[in-house]
Length: 314
Image (cartoon, rainbow, N blue to C red; front, side, top):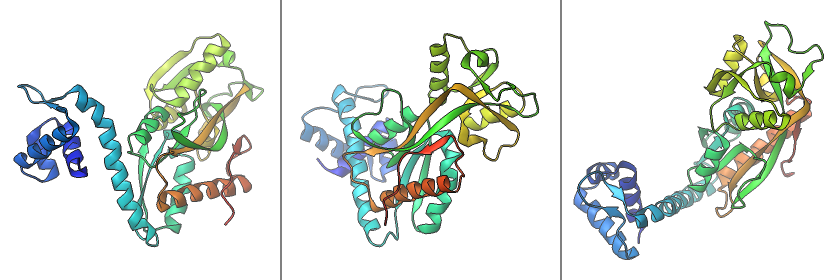
């Protein structure tokens, strides 16, 4: 078994065509077919159904697929690590983050990272926490900044808690306050129409769980939005939304109303335990931790955001 054979198999699994897979890999189709056959002989099982009709993977092929992705990704990481050891002159960090963290913490932290390490690049993937965990497990991400679910994360991931962040209700500042007290309960909130995030968003799950715990049903004005769309719909008066406190910064058209009892979420940095961080990944993590500590010191994070981890002292 060779890395090249696994790469050919992955290309075939992705495009489901010998011709297109050969084009993707830049080889002749007979070459790709021979290498796949050699891989199957090495493993002792057919990986691809070669009958007429759409190309499909055999049960053995389905079993090998996630392992092949991890092996090829780890090999890419090894090559990247060797290049990065030489003075961090080259390299990349594949970062995943939830949409609220992309427009909040990371939008401010990434410029700091680039100022310090201009030769390192960042590939940013924006998604819900469950999909980010899947990206880590498949070797498609180096690190992910995500929300820790109530049941915790898989022990195969190393988790560094970053923030404990309060969630509040966003409403349009152009309309009267939701409450004269500046706070409201989930029961009071249930009387308002919600602008709700799409399925897979952590904020959707947290909000619906809070409603269930309070014994009330949500009433939706709009469902299925991404973060920017939800905030814009709130600004225009379509409804209200439960959002992290950090998103209120720089949005003067939004009014914040705190929930009582308070609703919090924990934000963490996660990566695979079985893959040592490359130098670029390590300096990204250290930069992010240092940025959060400094932002907390000067009050940029607000009073209801608590930093949970400190960068190591140089």
